Length: 333
Image (cartoon, rainbow, N blue to C red):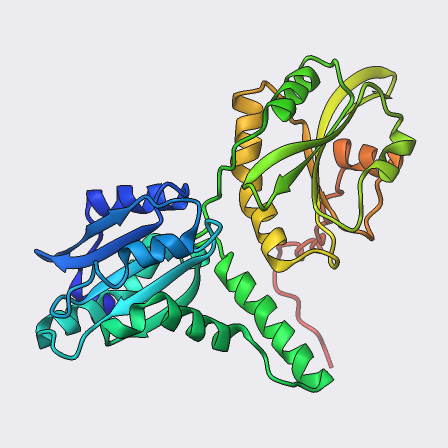
């Protein structure tokens, strides 16, 4: 039904959604007006989301005006989507909002929405009511070992669905000054090894360690296998008698030991961060690698990535020669 209405977000709403994804807005109220979705109220907020909730809700909603409310809790991936439709609202307005819900989530990006709540009474928009609902939603009752494994599997599948390529276009976290300086030194061959991490609390990319020189045989010991990391390595080597300089980017993502949120942030930050490393800091990346705890990081493995063996083309079946042309033979019996 959402595709049949043709109602899309206008320019003002697209701008507000982009500001929200950059953590510059705490709350965005969206209504359907003149056959388009438009922001009706925006609130920048403070550092405390509970104080911001009390300052805006439920005062910013009107019982006769159905709306979507986007509210950010802590990080840019913890948005609450509230669909407010009071029973006293006009039937046409309620139908329009219901028909545009899927379109709106597609416009904003499902990967950013942590919780969804449908509200029909302004009383359910108080902070106490929301926290009670959130507590009941997140708390788990006693479960057997099998039920707990099934629940964890469902969370993993939901996280993968949220991180799908149809919505996730990347999150550009700021790079701290120490990391910027290290990347510039790496680009000028003043450093051999630079390792960075994503600070999930402060939503920034920070520097973990640097080395002026590092032998390829010692690289594996510098890349942790129990936590995600971004690693740059200037690999100087000789190939077929010719000295070569290569810059490798190694994205290490362990299969266990890190939270779903941490893995999602590392994955979504990688694209914008690599673009900044190359365009702003001058790092020329020769090859990219993605490894986990089981992958090999020896010198031989690096050489196989940089200089892959040529793949032999499959041999074609040679067809037999056709019979010679000539007069038809008569076989006597």
